[in-house]
Length: 350
Image (cartoon, rainbow, N blue to C red):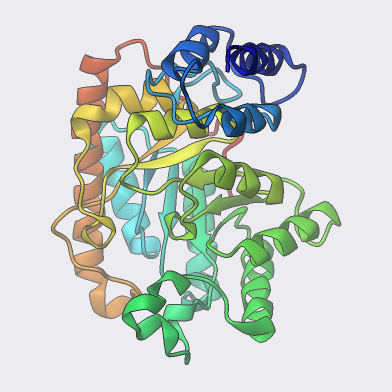
């Protein structure tokens, strides 16, 4: 066991000094060798193998500070989700200006397929003028089409994936349509679609700067799974809503892409309110999009003009919640830096 412990420490040291994209800060060395009691750890061999793959040897219990940043040096950016259409987007931008909340990205959940060309163009124009990223969900999805498994208790894991090749083709057409109307970011929740869309981006079928924001519904919940999403072409990854700091720290160690994380979580994803954790979230997860959903609010998907007034009111309240969260952040982590609007890496519409 002593010899295996030495081998494990050697592997950890090798991992920390590797000249590749996956190395961890040198400060992790003591944490990795001593948090895991390698003199008696029955999992030492497996941990050693994970390290050889460039992964952390486990969840990082000390939740170390992330040394990674956005391209401009910022720790965090702000996302307002469930912005269902131009009216809601105008409300978000107005409320953000009134409350002095810098919103870098808005995202929408009803999908490209449920918007008119004119509505998409208007959202693109609003984003372009405000220098804010606009990310629209891709459809159709399993929950909204003719399959029955999604309706069963055990079948809900099918979530927002695309059933069959024809559904995949429809989703690809959604991406093409969004791109043609000026959008440069879409939400994806299917690994196959992500791989195909990345190939499209590589081969010039869609713009090379097109952003694939991975939905929380993808469900990758460990560092290896998120690494796989990065390899498949993810631009940013929305982590599950209930992960603690050691799990988040392991994810951050494994990937370089920004993580997206709900600080306030919609009821149907857990309803957690993590405002007092926002300092640690930014410290551990940077670069991170802090995302402000809304507890005790109705599910408005799919949205439309029949829900317009409610959607606009909910959008304004999400900006208010962001103001509250950012006030906490300034108290808890005053050194945290954010980006200017229009910063490098934001998929601003064209």
